[in-house]
Image (cartoon, rainbow, N blue to C red; front, side, top):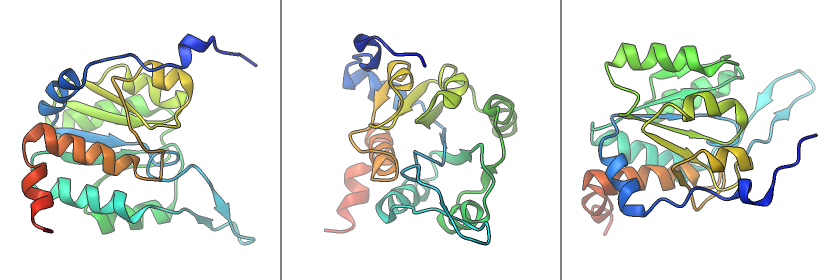
Length: 189
């Protein structure tokens, strides 16, 4: 087992104004699923059926972000699950890449398909399998409880844990960077 030095577990200190500047250029947001849109727990039934818990506020954040049309949203996940397909369809996410143990080819296919650059892409991850993509994007985001190496190589770390509001943190930060957060939240006041 590899033990990390304490300084490796700390995120890079990048001023929030610089994070928002990077975020203002984002046209594609990619989420990992397990550990990001869920808390990473896998519930398996006796019949082999897989169950996952998604946070409703994360889902509403994604819907609010998509409603502005400024940013495409996608998922790239190593596992394959019908529940992921169902949840993403419910949220309006049409770019779904499942069973991608090596996420880099899916990432490259997706940005080519959408005509966006690496710099115009944000990726949210929690574990080392996310690093090959995170190290290429314009805005690499680690959830609060991500592996220390993932936090070290991120530009920003969410205040919330994976599956517990992290996706909402990301969506609201991107809407703030695009100048639409106050208007979006104002609809509910």
